[in-house]
Length: 116
Image (cartoon, rainbow, N blue to C red; front, top):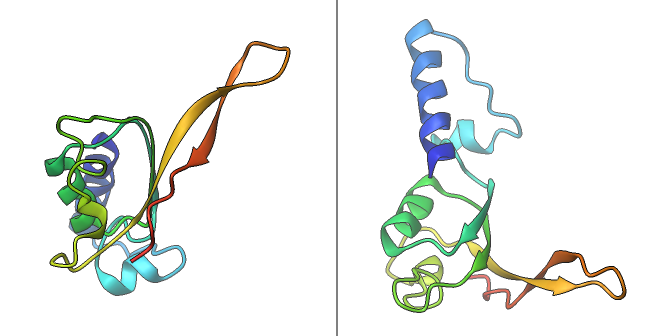
């Protein structure tokens, strides 16, 4: 969640200096959300509190490797797709797979949550 804090810090400094908003594709600038449509990559599945931060930041997609069966905001509580929330995002549980012959590992997207 450090990246969201850094984006917010940059935005605060920009507003204090009165600089025009660099909204990239226009989406974040028009909506007022700093992380609208961005992709988040994480080694661990976010907890419920972190999932709500992602919802409020309006991220587009979340990719994670390690699932948390006890406190996982995605696998246990499906926070990315709750109908009561005003934003939903797509999630991908990426699992390490061994490549043939080399013994090295790479991530492959699997178990994509339905887009809602």
